[in-house]
Image 1: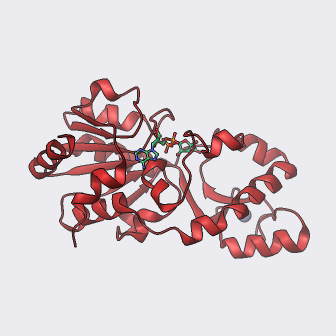
Image 2 (image 1 turned 135 degrees about the vertical axis):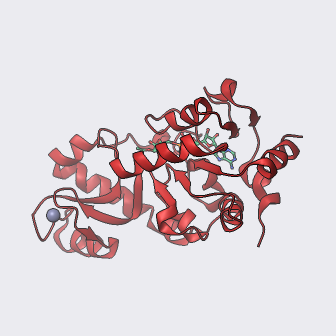
Length: 246
Ligand code: OAD
Ligand code: ZN
């Protein structure tokens, strides 16, 4: 029933903006944050100020990242990613707003400029001082050689995955583009997010207030279920699988 109604809403919409969270990537083997077995059930997040202040925190952060490397390197887009990419190719989806850092929307066929990454990307690294990009291989080699997380070769500030940590500034450009997309779409679909982390969780509310229809697809209830036009408490791959096209 929910899937039928979703099909109708998608068919009627002219501009659909998907907003994704970690739940869209669990079928790709990447754990989410808050489900049983999720990242934050196993490790406490390392806030940005701790990363800046402490070599030990930086070493721990990079050890965790390297421990996940097999998982990220092997992950392929799932049915949810592929369904959204089909709608993108069909001209129904101008861009995707994502909290995810796994690069799987790009891997599914979205042009990089059409993936708004609110929380950055973990498939490469950046200097927190001058912004210089680094490949993870380089960080790994330096870490193995020196036994410690490296600093930037240009400015000597710490190098971090290109992600946004708690306490770190949100990226300006991404926030602006996500705002414009949320206000201009006629259908906004939140997929696989607990909707507890702000300001990201503000975009479904913003879209709804601006007049879009709001759909939430998530296994568990969220605080925004009561403002949604359609809520589907079901598996994402199963729900979006029927929308995978060419
Ligand atoms: P969460 O782990 O908070 O929520 C993921 C949601 O997806 C949960 O409510 C699950 O029930 C649901 N879910 C998982 N697999 C699913 C499936 N196959 N089908 C349907 N539902 C499924 O992840 P996010 O909401 O993405 O930010 O987390 C938001 C932010 O918190 C992340 O971007 C990250 C994290 O801390 C930062 O680190 C800044
Ligand atoms: Zn630098």
